[in-house]
Image 1 (spheres, rainbow, N blue to C red):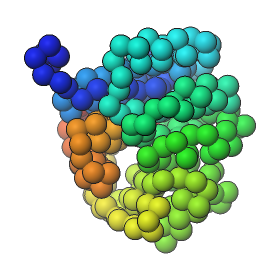
Image 2 (tube, rainbow, N blue to C red; image 1 turned 180 degrees about the horizontal axis):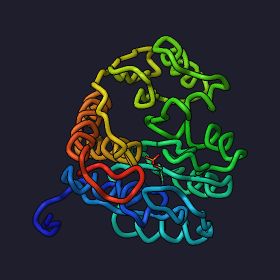
Image 3 (tube, rainbow, N blue to C red; image 1 turned 90 degrees about the horizontal axis):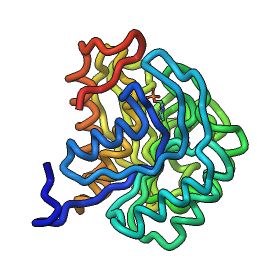
Length: 266
Ligand code: PLP
């Protein structure tokens, strides 16, 4: 338990969707941010009805309600860093972008499109709105290979194509892109950090055989936001976060929670 009366703790806001089964979305974000020693806050963007087996339905949260949630947080506890996850409608993108116009802190944006279970988590026209509004605002975006493929308009599967796609996304207005290799089919998973300066860094990890990966993207992006809130550089934050996700997948490898893609162990 953090005693906020006696010392300042880095505050991290997750603006994201809900997962009542506890594996992804704001639930994964809150566990991650707390496990990394930061103070977690949430603004709910959508109410997916889901469990480890899939997404059954998605209910909207009215944009007014999202704005009011943001107001309540910003009036009281300005966040040191923000993570943005599921933003599934153009109206929500515009609302969040409008609100964050004056926010000068670091923003990690995970452009969530499809769940591990194959459910569409974004409306088609929202992708363009994300590119226009949230990509330039974000300190870093963290797409997986499926998301990268949608964003650059062709299938990205090789390491060379991943780096090229990272550069393409930078030319589309991103400040930094983490092209995640978790969906590669090789035993070694390579992830690339591509930055506006032209600097590219690669990170390798070994594949862990498990179905329990639900929420890994949410966990990674909120870990990056947490490490940045603690004052780490972007490169340190990315490296530490990839290690954190790897450990959480490893430690949850044999967990038996639900009948589908189970959660990580934080
Ligand atoms: N539900 C919500 C609210 C999410 O934000 C996400 C992904 O970011 C998912 C489900 C899907 O998570 P995964 O692809 O790890 O199963």
